[in-house]
Image 1 (cartoon, helix red, strand yellow):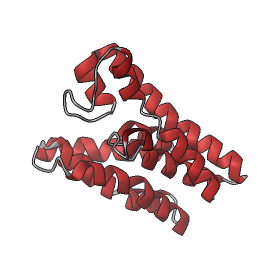
Image 2 (cartoon, helix red, strand yellow; image 1 turned 30 degrees about the vertical axis):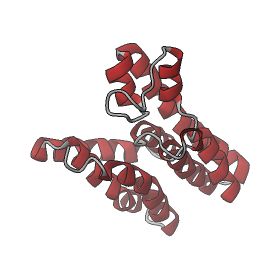
Image 3 (tube, one colour; image 1 turned 90 degrees about the vertical axis):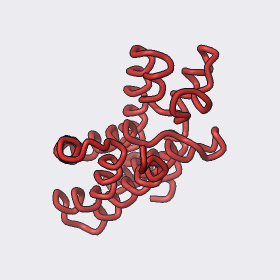
Length: 180
């Protein structure tokens, strides 16, 4: 499982948004929100590069699950690889352990592991956003709900840990935006 996590972390750590910005002579760490993720790429670079970053970040999550499962020879390796990808995206060694918020990569992981988990997360986000209209706080709440969502759909300790591992880096990256 550790190898699956490390493979996922390495894959997730590629700062695609930052690289897209660098190719256009822009530094996403210093422009827009300062976040090297898909939404800031959209703001700073435009809709086409932003969408490309979003899709590639989600693909990182999907690929990490597939590779993690292959490396470990077990579906549990896919869970570890997916968690590694989100941690890698959020705390990239390429950017001195800065990174994106992990939403697109996490969505890719959820899509690969169980699309119902992604659907549940999106539904919860939509409901909370309609009620509170605070997207950063809503994203934090949905991240913190991942262990519960995972355990509800897959009642096992492994999925509880998966939900915790998936939600933790996303929650940590959203804490600084509590007042936005």
